[in-house]
Image (tube, rainbow over all chains, first blue to last red; front, side):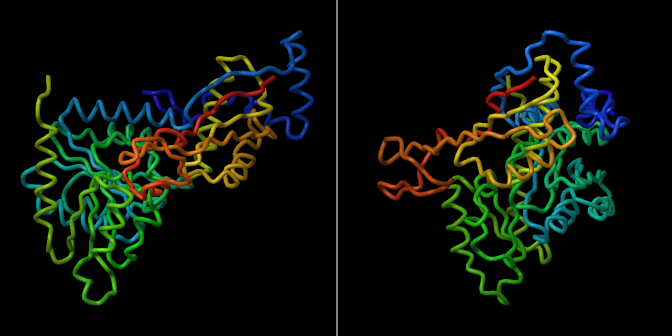
Length: 266
Length: 113
């Protein structure tokens, strides 16, 4: 149960369940009895206007996270990709190069296990693992709670490594400054047009594992063209987290974005 | 995409509204789903029945109002109908399109008792 937002994972309104379960299969009869005794004369059927966005709740938490990051001058990035694109290796290599100059924290989303958070902690920065269980994406609410636990410093860099999934995380705003989509060259150049939502939602695309290009038929130019077709604004960097080739541009981008968050706007 | 978690969000809204709007059961749910919202309506119906089981919306009817996709084409300077996100303009072939309708997913109204 959550003390801050009173969330209780959505069970706070489930009084009906509590009453129904002990009655097993007879609950329909009990309900009718209860209705007649408690609310006589209540018209049985009526229409209720709702007009509510299905993702409204997530978007409210995302706005709250965004305010949190803004007040602290933090840069929060939401890293999205398919499983196995090399997100965690990119992170550990990035952290190794930046941790002496910047405060960094990481939120790791995976369906199960704490393996990724352990890999991050081995680099010496704080990391919190969120296991989504049956869920296929991180949501803004869980990220908000992770922030309470992690207590990131002002002007720090927060990486949120989302669940490896090119579909669902695109619809769930976490309050980040940018979504960064990572695509490895072992995956096929048509990923951007096969999963356009994610490439449309991202501001930066990282083409990873470029050290493997000599062994593959991957057409980088075609891939970049596809990405720009679904998102004309997207910026693209090619790199190999393993060999370090191209890492400089990524680090410069990160520092520039971090600097932008540090500006005190009126 | 993620139709199951969308249904869980819908259930949360139904549960919240039950207190505010004083109802005990939901009989019908009308959703407004845009053609560009990346929602597979068949998957949504399948997930809906499963997620609503045992809740105040158990056996509720799901009605989906489909809204066509529309985008503003910059070179043509007019609205055009698009079938899916990131389609090219059906008239000039440009992909400088700004979607302005058909990406919504909203709970519109409920029949309750």
